[in-house]
Amino acid sequence: MRAGDVRALARAVSLVENAAPEAAELLSACFPYTGKALHVGLTGAPGAGKSTLVDRLARMWREAGRRVGVIAVDPSSPYTGGALLGDRIRMQERLGDDGLYVRSMATRGSLGGLAGTTADVAQVIEASGREVVLIETVGVGQDEVEIARLADVTVVVLVPGMGDDVQSLKAGIMEIADVFAINKADREGTDRVEKEISAMQSLASNHEPDIWSVPVVKTIGTTGKGVDVLQAAIIRRWDWLAEDGRLRARRQIYWRERIEGMLRQALLKEARAHGLSETELAQHADRAAAGSEDPYKLVPALVERVFKARGS
Amino acid sequence: MRAGDVRALARAVSLVENAAPEAAELLSACFPYTGKALHVGLTGAPGAGKSTLVDRLARMWREAGRRVGVIAVDPSSPYTGGALLGDRIRMQERLGDDGLYVRSMATRGSLGGLAGTTADVAQVIEASGREVVLIETVGVGQDEVEIARLADVTVVVLVPGMGDDVQSLKAGIMEIADVFAINKADREGTDRVEKEISAMQSLASNHEPDIWSVPVVKTIGTTGKGVDVLQAAIIRRWDWLAEDGRLRARRQIYWRERIEGMLRQALLKEARAHGLSETELAQHADRAAAGSEDPYKLVPALVERVFKARGS
Image 1 (cartoon, each protein chain N blue to C red):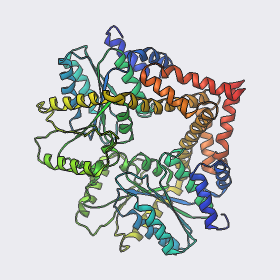
Image 2: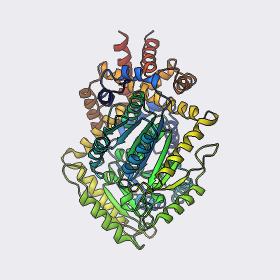
Image 3: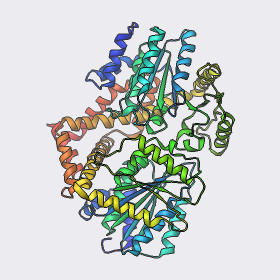
Image 4: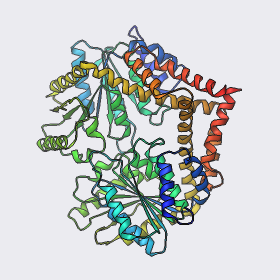
């Protein structure tokens, strides 16, 4: 995989995605080769044209001689459909370029949560020798916010006249945007979206103490217009992060959360391995629902049992 | 508290909200008196008039002789402001009625997560002898989805012409609605919202195998118009749940998730109690950010240490 074998990389990613027993060792082996790449998150409503933008950005970085990874996360909502995977495979085929690795993920409910798995996959892809990793997510839910946290630079893609006014994005999305892209900017309503963002920005206190002024870039993904400006804005943010130890501080916060999440998951796994089967859990739940077993007494007893089983 | 002392109830709720050492014992003592009340969740965008609807519903149940609890959850987003608490206190004062207990919560980041704490508070309030517990949440984020899961009946409150088109609610909100209320239904755009919901409903596969047809009720909270119809729809859903063991099955699923969440939290707490301090966690995160310590090796080592410390 380190030698540039794309099939080896694909196998490695699958191990991580499926939480195979070898995954932890693999991630450990990858760790020394990580921490250098630029991780860009792109998020926005379905139909905003994110895939096209990612495609354009990936090509631009390839033309500049960078090796690029793309992760397309589709939490397969019943409302978005599943066209994404097919699109991305076509993208890879069309390019026939080992310097670009594209991977789709649709693994809601995976062991460490979708955000955790995506973070691990990004690590593996970076370790295969990529300088840029683009992570595309659909929607504006909790998963997207968490995935934004793992990216160094998060681009929120908006589009005029799709009913996704800026107002409706208030739940968390303003906080995560490092760059706004108004895509399909040849459409009517572009100015309105731009004005709404400005209004929102003046209302909100900035999310970082030393101020990064969030740029708003107009793009037309289909023609490529403005994508160079978008790329420049991303790089400007990346350079800004490099100053004054900001990137280090940001990643420290990230790892603080991630280590706790990994630890929580590992402890639960121990509990599962030491006598707490899915069947037993379901039985406890059924008795709690019937009112015949007090879950507030049950949980401490289960903790005791796990420690005893492990200790003996 | 069981004798109807509201101040005792308020103290009990505070213990749970603050995750006091006595909380687990208190929740255990409450458990036998729970599992009977109707828990109604109401959610929707800020400004949709949820408080007024909750106020009206609470009075109607009071007039029917039911004891009622209200939990107003405000995750204190920078975009919503904090007017909620004041409103609710006024509501309680105005009524001067021990049969109605109103509590505001704004405890994002609490130990078991906001949803967990809300679930526990609802248990305590039910155990104080309430037949109906109304839980009001602002917004449509992950917290709201989780809080919806703990309610037996979830009402999604929409309002015409506020920019929160039904389209923009696609991220999870369609799935959680058992009843739609279009509030401020004297406003222009009411019919449009109604049509959008219908279109959405015909697109989406229903979220339960034996079909509950989600009713759409038009209300005007300020005058009370339609709130009786809303209450009837809630009760109809409650009666429907009582049939064919649906409520039991729903609560079994709920407790399955909740017990796992409690266990995860309890295990992490053990880890914290046995040598993993916040300072140490921060140091590990800093070393991971610097690339000098591999977190994938660290976590299993931490797990080992916790079990050893506990065992000795």
